[in-house]
Image (cartoon, rainbow, N blue to C red; front, top):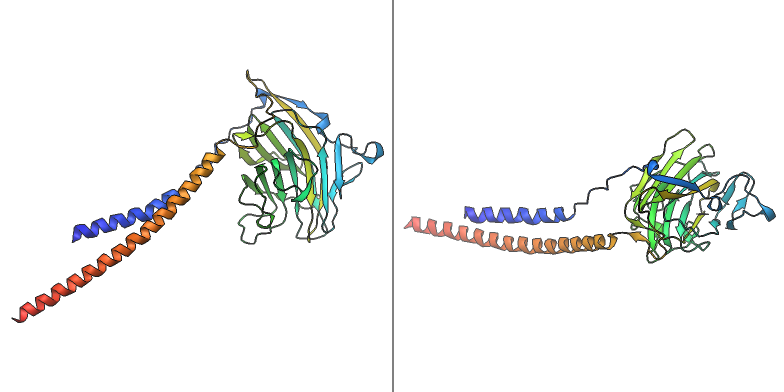
Length: 336
């Protein structure tokens, strides 16, 4: 009887522990610092912007503007502080550098003392200047999006807004704006940006298949790392761009400066241009398959545990009946 109970206890513990093991997450990636001595940075003027902005016919040479975007000599305003506005700013030249760095300064301001919305985005995508619902640009985009979401659409979210995040899409995934898109997000961080006195700079680098997104406030701060992703595949021939949108809540989204660099490796074998690469993260599909397998495993073990517990309950009932019956027989035998 005691051995039977020991086996039952051990089996129950095993069934409970296996699902918890299946739910364990993998360790975060080891961050490797960017060694500038190993690279040459070549400024690319045709992918960059600096004051004064207005060229002939109130346009910006090399850039396409649309929607609510307004250009002055000192700044580019993607959206005014009005409802339901969408603004675009896209470079007209495709990028031919397999490794690159884009630095840009921006501000977010408005008449509301507390809430600003919806946010703005930096793009490196196959498509350009397509109006849509993802911060004013296309859903199901192909390439990279770096989003500054300034309004929390999901009350159950555990992140603090404004929230900076990176997204990689091959054109098959929808950005769920109503839930602030947690399903596809690679990584992100909180980034306070509100107010005209808060000048923020983002540094987005894609070098040797490593994506980094860094930020700093003001001229004297050091860059702080927000996104680090290894084994990222982004092809050449895509376009750099910016977009912003407002909804029922509004904000002014300013772009003040854009500086783009081609990054050339000093190593013996630099990465060649990758024009036919599908955007994504290497080994992403096996990871997804592994996650699906773990989900199936947890469901199987959950069902097995229920069956086992029901069987154990039946065994316990039979044991209880057997013990009661034995005691009744002993009492009857004692009378005689």
